[in-house]
Every structure is written in structure tokens, then in C-alpha cells.
Image (cartoon, rainbow, N blue to C red):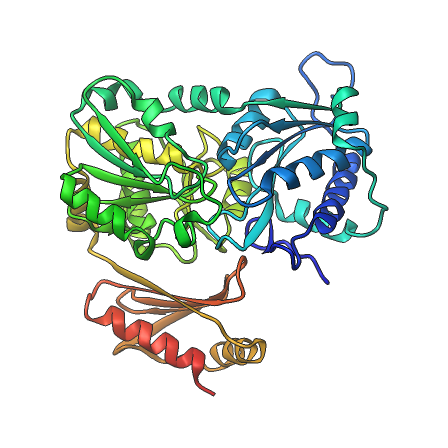
Length: 478
């Protein structure tokens, strides 16, 4: 069995590939990687600090058990670890790494995947996603060394493991980067869907007091996530959409299972795609906070970002899907904000990493700062940069079908997209066919599930179903 990391860490079905034995095997490879990597120095210290890793976990079955197993292997390698005493957001692990100056962070989670999955995310000392170089280093060390392990209680007694609650540090970090007071002053009605994951009632806690009212649904942790994958997309947020309309809420905010992504529902029950949310945040950061810098988007994100960035006079960089590509640029370039189609958005001044709770609050800050509704902010963007219609289909295909599909697309891509002539073909990540009117159709392999994803966007609403139908037809034809 080959263990490989996808777009964000390693994920697999529990009791098949994701087992205690394999978790220990991967952790040993991580320990070997950390041992050979130069460790950060504490200011004024004569030598690099000892290796110490924070280990968090989400609300899935046995996630706490797997976190303990990770700590045992780290201890067996003479490395210290801090294990969270409760399920926490992945972004809380990232914040803790930075605040404590630790070597790395490990998070047991399968993020938005169905309940039968679990996984492991690796965070660098910067708090950002593991780089391609780190992932390659870990993968080539798999199985090279025997797994060294010290029982949890013995390691606890020896001081190699300690427990801590990272949430106070996490919440302080958010308060220092969001104008919480401005949000509290506004009579906003906010409905939050925790999707039975790790965001719990944290937004409620952050906004308690003042005129803003927050209500949370699905705050109770559930390893089955209420019977659906904890992914904050339109098809999973129908209840939130209904409740936002019925309660006349100002906004609905949803977080995925480990709370590093968000979904946003407008007061009319409409789901805003993450590209639209990123544009609202980008405009707020530039025009209200007077920030500047490069904007980074994944290949599957909206063309509205391209037009807005050009109007603001900012540089735009497009990268493959996976926040690790954005995080790497955040550390090496003057990046202001970066976002992916799946709802992960990061602002470098906060962390070189995505955070669904922080970005949800930043949307509220944008509304509060301008004294405008969410839909007004969106309509202003659409009037200036066009209205875009976006959709996605996920297809489970046999490996032979997948290979044949991408071979056909690369050798003979379509010459028209639902009537629009094709202007270019982008192979940065999968195959993206772009029309002269900026409509596009993207085919790519998922990095977290055995599916092919088909994305489409167009400024013509009637063309969207035709684009998606074309994508499905191309994917399933022989």
C-alpha cells in the first residue's frame, strides 16, 4: 500500500489505509524529516531550540486516539509534543505553532471529507501548510526507519508530552487582527453553521456583547456530521440557507469540519461562491484598511478576481489547487491575500494560512465598516466587474477513464465552449479551457478523493448548465 499526500496532507478511509499502524509509520517519517531539518533559533539563544510539535485533532471517530499515537512516536524519537485537550480548528494549531515558536504542527483531520475518512495535516514553523519540499521529504522517508514509540503515560511522566488548550491563544490572535468592536456596534443578525465540527460556538464567543446577535446551529460535535460531509458548499447548506431567510438574518456563515474553510449565505438565502467572498475581502483590505500586495488565486477560482485585481493595480498570480501553493508564496512574496475555490482564504498579515473563522469575521468587518449589507457589497462588485455564474460537478471514474480523458483534452481540446470560441488552454493544474468571453471549463483530479472535478464559470447564466453538460459529456465519452 502506497501512502501519498494530496493537495492538503494525507487522507484515507479509516480501517483501510488510515490505520494506527500507518499513522505511526507516517509520524516516524515526519520525525525523521524534522530531525534533519534546521530548527529555528529562539532570539538570543546560542543554539537551535529543541524540537517540539503541537498535535491537534478534530471531532471524527478516534481522532483523539490517533493524536495520542502521534505523540507516542514523537516521544520515542526524543521529541517533545503538546497535545490539545479537546477538538480544535486546524487554524488554532497553526496559530499555536507561531505563538509558541514551535517546530511544526500536526492536525488529525480529514477536513471536509465524509465521515469514513480521516487524515493528517502538517504545518510548518510559519503556521502555513507543508511545502512541496516538506511533503516530498516526508514521503521519501516512509518506511525507511523502524517506528520508535514511547507509551503515552510514560512520555507524559517524562515530560515529553503535555496537554494544553490552544483556544485562548487562537482567539487572542483573531481579536488582534479583526475589528471586533466595530462588528459588535452594528445590529447584525448572524447565523453560524458549525457543521458539527471544530468551530463550535467560537464566533458567538468572539462577538458576545454589543448589538450584533449570533446564533449557532449544529454546534454539537458529531463524528457523523449529521449524515453529510462537512463541506460548506451550497448543496450542504440548504438548512442554513432556509434558516437565514426565515429568521431574516444579515448573513449565514458556515465552517467545514476543521474550520479552516468557510461558506457564506446572503440574506436572500443565496450561497456566495468563495471567489466572490475573496473579492469582497480584497476590496475591503485595499479600500478600507489601505493594504497592498500581490493577490494569489488557484486555477479554479473566479475571473472576477482577475478584473478586480487589475482595477486596483495589483499583481495577480495563479497557482495550482491546494493552499500549500498559496502559503509558499505568502512566505516568499509580498502577498496580501490568497484564496482557493473550496473556501480557503488567507491574509498574510494574520497568518500564511487559511482560517475560516477569521475570514468569516473579516466579512462581517467589511459589512460593518461600510454600513452596507452583504448583497450590496456583492452587487457593487458585479456592477463594476461583471456577474459570474459558477458550478462544479464531481465524477467517479475508473482510472482508465481518467487517463483517457486527460490524454484527449491535452491532445485535442474542444474548439468552442457552448458556442464561445476557445481562446486558450491552461495546463497548470489539470486542463482548463478558456473562451474569448472569459468563460472557462476546468478538469482536474481531486487531491483528496478518487474523483475528477469539473468546474465551469461564465458571465452568461444560460451557458453554465451547457458548459457543465459539455464537461460531463467529454469526461464520460469513449
